[in-house]
Image 1: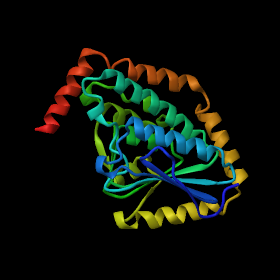
Image 2: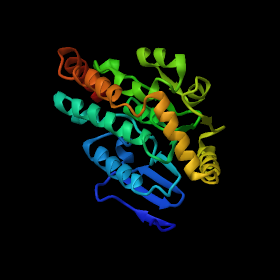
Image 3: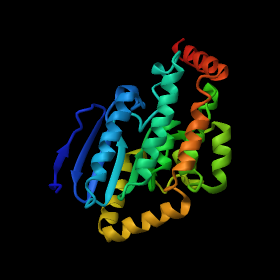
Amino acid sequence: MVERGFLYTPRVPCVSVVFRDPVITVTLTDPERRNALSDAMFDALETAVAGIAAHPRSAVVRLRGAGPAFCAGFDLSACVGNPATLERFIRRLSSLNRSLRRLRQVVVAEVHGAALAGGSAMLSACDFVCVAPDAQLGYPVHRIGVSPAVSLPTLRNAIGGAARPLMLSSDIIDGRRAYEIGFAARCANTAGELPELVDGLCADLALKGHAALARTKAWLNELDGSDDDAPFDLTAQASAELCSGAESVSMLESFWSSRRR
């Protein structure tokens, strides 16, 4: 039984989880690295999602990032010169996305600052994406020779025809544009108003029938293929197998060197 106001912090760092039924708040807490997805961050998120799945009475999960960004993507410093790490991150991202999508609870993302590559991939697995107007979203991974295909199982039905150019262009779009094309469900008038907007949405969802919400989400997952493991496995493989190729190794090293100048 979850006590109202109970704070649960996983032993693995990088994430805090607050259970205040019926809303659970998950905060990425590595602001110095803009909440980059590292092995430690994946460990913490997997621990958090598993804990949430064990508390079905909660109706809403609020996912947010501490500091200047929601999540700036993979920790590339760990991947340069180590293709196996990049491949592992891709597979872990695929697993995290399917776990987020299959939670019984409605998942609401609160997005400010950068939500790039793996950060945007996580958003595609959420049920509501709420953005600040100046948030940065997109999949700029072709520049390091990697495919964003790992995101497609949860993205394919999220923004319709707009998904194709977003996947292929590596464009970075702001929160207003994300809302216009349907990637975001809500856009705050200002960055400062985003928390209040998400407060209101979570409170409104919490008043709904929890079983009805869960059943509706389950049927949405059934109809859009989110319950099928094959698309997740195949796209993860398609993305991961590029990591050890000469193109990806060379482009990642070049990209990382240019950032360090």
